[in-house]
Amino acid sequence: MNLFSSNHNSNRGFRKAGMAGSAAILLATALFLGSCSTWLDERSANRADASQTTPASNNARQQSLGEGEMSLSAGEKAPLLDPQPELETLLDQTGVNRETFQYYRKLSKNEDRLRTYQDSDQMLVLKLAQLETINQSRRNAGLDPLGFDILSSRVANKFGREAALKGYTGHWNTSGQKPYQRYAAAGGSHHISENASGTSSSADLSRRAESYLELMQKAHRRFMNETAPNDGHKQNVLDPLHTHVGIGIALEGGEFRYYEEYVDRYLTYHAPSKEERPLRVKSGETRTIAFSPGIPPQLPPAENKEASRGRPPLFVYAVLVYYEPPIKELSPSQIERRGSYQDYSDVITLQIWPWDLEAFTESTEQEDPAVYKIPLYFPKAGSYYVQVYLSPVPYKAGAEASTAGKIQASGLVIFAE
Image (tube, rainbow, N blue to C red; front, side, top):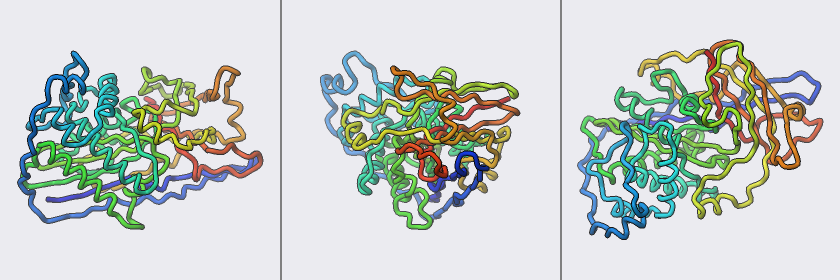
C-alpha cells in the first residue's frame, strides 16, 4: 500500500510597501516546499467487522433527525459507505454530539452548491468524528477548535473523486485549477489552504465506516508526525488564524484520497453576493466588490463559546489583487510533478495600502463595521485573486506597511473571459 501526501506550505507570501508617498517596494519572500512522499511497502489488511449494537428506538431516531424528517442520502457522486450503518448506532460508536450533528446537518441540508457531492448523514458523522481529531491536535497546542465547513468539504469530495479515478495526487485538478480556484468556482469567497494525502493499494479498500475513519485518522497522524523543517502540513493544521476546516474524501477501488481544507472566515462580501458567485466578467469590464470585516461564526453554540475567547476586533489593512492567465488543462503526470502550490502569482494588478483605504470606505452611524467598496478593472482574460488583509491593531500613520503577520481573509477569485 502506497502512502503519499502534499500540502500548501503554511509560510505565506507577503508584500511590503514603504511609507505613504514613497515608492512601493514589493518583496515575495515565502518558501513553498515540494510535495513530500512516503512510500510504505505493505498490503492492505482485512479489517474486522464493526461492532454491532441494538438498533435505536423510534424515539431515539426522532431525537437525532427531528420528528418527521428523513435521513439525508448522499449526493450522486459523494463517497459511499457499504454497508450503510444505522445512524443512531454510528453516533453512539463515534461519540459525535447529537446537537453538533444536528447543527451541521441543517447547514448541509440548506447548502445548495455542489449538491451532487453532499455527504450522507452517516458520512457527515464520520467527518465530524474526524473534526474532533483535528481539533484535539489544535487543543494540544493551545489553539481554538475549528468549525466544519460544508462547501469546501464538497469541493474536496469532487476533487478527490477525480484524483482517485485517474490515479493521481496533488493540488491541481485536470482542468488546471488550484485549491482556491476550485473553491471560488463553487461560489466560495473565504481564504483556504489545503493539506492533501492519498493511499494506493493493489487490493480494493473497504468502504466500511470504521475503515474510512481509520484511513482519515492515519492521514492526519502523518501530518502531525512531521518534524521541522519539513512540517508544512503540521504548520497548516496548527495555524492559529484558521476558523474552519472542510474534510474531503474519495475511495475508488484501491485509491483513497483525503483533504483538509483550512478556511479563514473573517469577511462578509456584500458584492458579489452569494447568489452572484462565482463572478464571471468580460475582459475590459469594471466591477465593484464590497465587503466588511466580521462574519457570523457558524459554529455550534458550545464550540462558538470556546472559539470566541478573547477574539479581538479586526481592521482592514490592505487589498491586493493578483492576476493569473487563463487556466489550462493538465495531465495526471503533470499534476504529480508540480508538488505544492503558491498562494499568489507574480503579477499584481491592484494594491491598496492602509493610507489609501479611507477613500474606499463608506460608513454611517448605523453601519458598523465600515463597508469597503473597491472598483476592479479586468484588462484581459484570466483569473483575478482578491486578497484582503486584516490586522488586530489599526495602522499607525507614517509607518512602513507589510502584510507579514496579517490575516489573509479573502479567497475571492473573479474569472474574466
